[in-house]
Length: 163
Image (cartoon, rainbow, N blue to C red):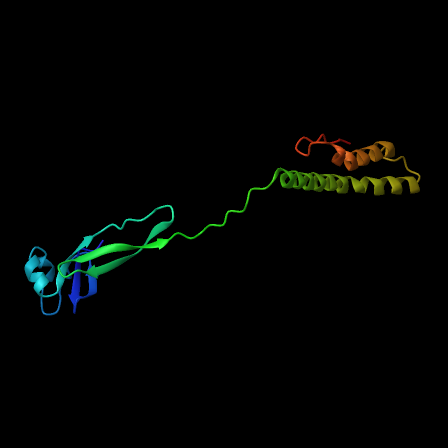
């Protein structure tokens, strides 16, 4: 907050927290702080802060402004509109449910992809007449159980099969 302003031709030219150390041909100009009448006679006026009234729900304070009223300088803040923030509408229950099923399907697809390599290993071991590591019936049952998770009623409480 400024305490002094220099006025020329009724227009605020400069604002200062304290008087400058030197000004024009004055040394130790800052020592004149209490000489209000003299300071006014050479264009230096006190600054008074005046808080603006505004609706805080729609407005906010902007930059400082300085206006000369003939006897003092009024420092105040501009009042500006708050930016309008877009709030998307709340999602419907149906939209939330659809998103939950998308997440379930993504998790199911990931689990199926993680198990696919076992089919390749099983086929290779059979071709090489080796004893298969995996029981193909259990593997098929697991993959079918994963495929069937979308038949469950509640996407928020899925019972996931294990291999």
